[in-house]
Image 1 (tube, one colour):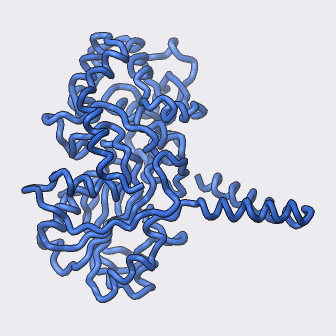
Image 2 (cartoon, rainbow, N blue to C red; image 1 turned 90 degrees about the vertical axis):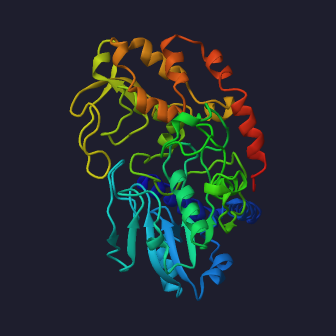
Image 3 (cartoon, one colour; image 1 turned 45 degrees about the vertical axis):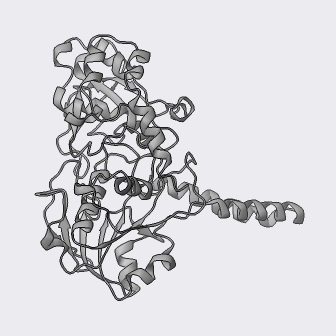
Length: 407
């Protein structure tokens, strides 16, 4: 990703330098085009400091952020401290406050080495701030980069932050950011018996909302205990609309380290509930699929290894996995069809020799939000039959979603 950003910068510099040699009318046209591009650029909530800084001045402020909470290339905490904001605590989600922990790694409370601010982990011994954690806080700022799927844990962290703010009469400000997978809404709606930290609410796999919109849905649908409401302010983005392409400038988590992986994630994460590797333990996770038992059925192979900070003990570590390479797959297909890909799941189940061992049932059902999808794959149901079973819940969700759209 860093190399991509460097190349983009060099191309921009080259283009700017080249304009000096153009005839005046062409140079003017290029200037107008560049201005139009800048005007159309998405401005995140965090970047609009002038809109929320007055809400923070003179208050005791807590930040629920991670490494994606950036203002002009710097972590928002560092920027706000320099602006005189009194930051008394930080709350970190999965992967930690500065985003360095591996997937699933439990994180303890600590003190931020750079700033000295106490950091409270919401992915260790607890998911929700305690009453003691919330003491001495006037305003909570939530700012993280979502990827738009139900099983991405930052969504549940948002819920528990809202719950704690509502219970302790603390104002909540959500600094909104784009959802890179909001060009379509799809998947089975989570059923009541599958509630978990990777499925807190009854929504489909792809929810099609920004965090600001989702916070509005949590309040509006009465999903907090006792139908409580968090005192919510959303700092909206500028120049954003649903479905607008957006390349994330910072990896939202260690194993979603490319735009390709982010766009494939809604379809590939279900494989975490199976024996099929999604490339954890490689430098290109969530862009490949494979298993050692599929040798001879597929030519492409990869070998997961231990990678500190990404995957210390990946499935099938140090074994050759045979399967498919999706690094050049046209991810535009998802938005065009409005569908996640179920073909790969059906294909690998059909090809795997020991079908009784293919699914890790409890994990798969939690990710899918239902046990039906697993049984449908086993029974050989067609994709259309599977999709038909998602209704009417999926259609009802799409109608509910419309009430909370901000863009």
